[in-house]
Image 1 (cartoon, one colour):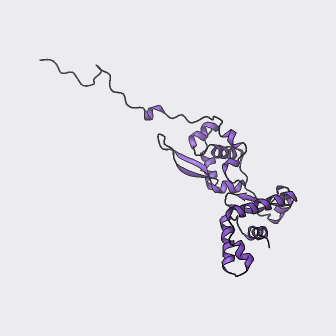
Image 2: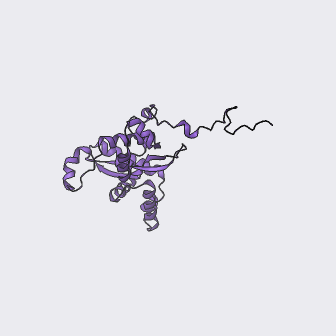
Image 3: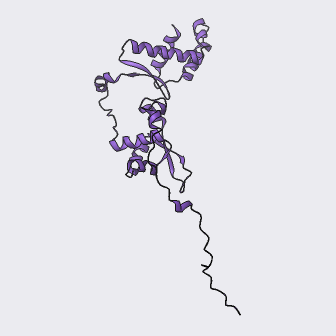
Length: 217
């Protein structure tokens, strides 16, 4: 077998997305357990070599018009069926109903994805409505997570997308979001921070002392 075929078999057999490090570990493990020259040769494969093989396999599937393709996601590589085959593939899993997000949920998720980390107040400034219920749904579905607190009065929570968000939408990172570089530069409304919270107290004006004056003898 060629190295490409071995890697193809590993991706196919893996029950979850398989990373390049896991592929390298499998190649090394097979080489250590045998005296077969081919397995020992592949045990010395390096990361660039494995990545090149994956990219080549990916191109071959695309060129031959298969009903599946090799996809790199945030947690590794896996085979996925094409969108065109979904009407038939869905019949194999009638109980697995896809969970759809509502318009407000998608809008809120998009704001978090493009402007993360972001506070709830800034999200509400963009949308113009309260997002408490929507944010809770996104948190419950593990699409959004709490990422600390902002250095602002009241220390509001910051939110960002999760690794599951990337897996759900088939992304390696947020730079692969549509029009990512352009939309991240667009100026959006932000929440107004009350100046009174951080404004230093003014000293009482001269001649306006609240203490009663002491009469002269």
